[in-house]
Length: 98
Image (cartoon, rainbow, N blue to C red; front, side):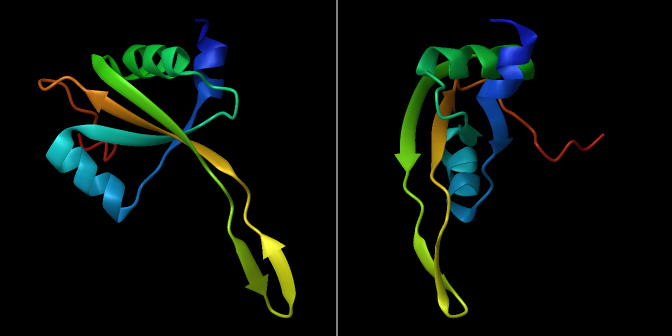
């Protein structure tokens, strides 16, 4: 996989209470990924960008919620998330402490 495609596949880490607990307890990290990303592409991108060993990748599509903005109805955009399970001796540090 070329460098450009790796950056297109992984969009951003998804940070939430649930994803933080998963990272601490199960060594899983959650990423927002491209709509056409496959498990193999996500695995390769995470392994090459973060220099870790990936055990398993689960991908799911999250439908956008319908919300009310003032008097109007609106819809949040749909997204695709990937739950990446790392091997027991690897970890990704997003804080970037030096």
